[in-house]
Amino acid sequence: MIAVREQPAVNPVAAAFPWLLPTNRRGLLKIGSLSLAGAAMPGLFRAPSAQAATVSGPPPAANGKARSVIFLWMGGGVTHIDSFDPKPEAPEEIRGTLSPIATSLPGVQFSEACPQLAKIAHKIALVRSYSHDSNDHLLSQAYTLSGRKVPMSQIQTEPNIGSVVSHLHGPRNLLPGYIATYGWTRPGPPPYNMFVGGWLGEQHAPFCVGREPEVLDFALTSGRERNPNPHVEDDLKPRSLELLEGLDHARLSNRADLRATLDGALRRIEQKSPAGGIDGNYDNAFRLLSSHDVRRAFDLALETDANRAEYGRTKIGGRCLMACRLVEAGARFVMVDYGYDGLYGNLWDNHNVPLQNFPHISEMAKRPYHVAGIDRAFAALINDLEQRGLLDSTLVVFLTEFGRTPKINKDGGRDHWGAAGSIFFAGGGTRVGQVVGATDRQGAYPTTRAYGPADIAATIYQFLHIPTEHLLHDQHNRPHFVLPEGEPIGPVV
Image (tube, rainbow, N blue to C red; front, top):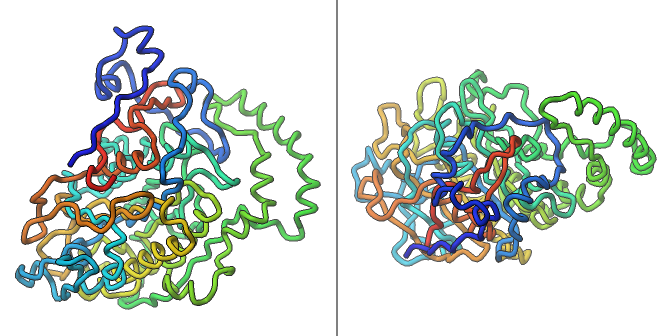
């Protein structure tokens, strides 16, 4: 079943001058010069522009059942055969050595590396026919993070889905509209930052809570152990929330009168800046820094030892728990970022070339920082949201740019495979307890309708009641649809 798209609201420009606009979204985007705007300087709390509102009407209200989104972003290409789509009848060079296990859904099996998610399979909607036509990391990540298919020259110009949400609805409870935990993983080499506001401006790039590593290019890290310690936790407390030494909250509030002086200086700079992108509004920044509730939301030490252990005392466990706390505090869109790491290397890009120093993919999947790690953390997240009464209002989406090759290569790894992969949805009104789509006996190609990154993005927007036909405007006031292509996944919404 395919969801029927509602008719878009009448655009005032189209109503007054119907001959100026084409009849479909793709046509509009082809009119004139639509080269994308350069990124503005960061301004975390800037509201949507009044100019955009006068052309397209006010942003649609966030009145869907999903009030928040947790976007589980596993950049690098998670193996689907060794996780959610095992092929036990295939030869060993395809299925590997992992055994299939039963799930809470009759007749549905996961890999043995996913015992916790197998127990709660009835709480998710698994999509096994995730597919698109690219095997390139950068092109596929740009496509998946934005829902927009672009050439190499535009991989950093399209706004992330979280950036669109931030632009339309802004911060809530003093929390930025788009937050990333960890926020520093980079595909490469050389490393590319794919977490961008694009033509919406860098003020809509994610607020990253992790500490920027000394080396952003994972390929340059050397001496990686073959079996590194999985029980390593991040320091996820944002530096921007740390008061300077000796600067307590009382002194901070007294310093608020410096805002006028700083604001005037920056506005003078802004007048001389062709980008006009410096945001002089410090009020929310001061409130964020001094808010007791916000600071508590970022403090994992307030969680019980038992709950932290449930997620796993790992990097991915801590990041998922942080996402849960932030949503509980009111965050709209939180991306859990886990893919490229100085300790573990490129976690999901398991070619198993000598530089990676990885074991066979079947053994790698069982490690607590690999498939087994996300299994534990994701299951704990879904259960924890449910226990806190947040699951019905929080859409959880697990996404990666593509799956891995059905045939295990000579080094015991799997290579890039855009043709097939597995992702899932949970919470937020999702129709859970089902598997959508299927792949062939080798896990190579969908045998049912395929769903690509644009469809995933359209599904997220549907849950948030954001019409994909809504017009956004870049920094040069050029129009762009929220999403030019893609349809919501009918069985899921």
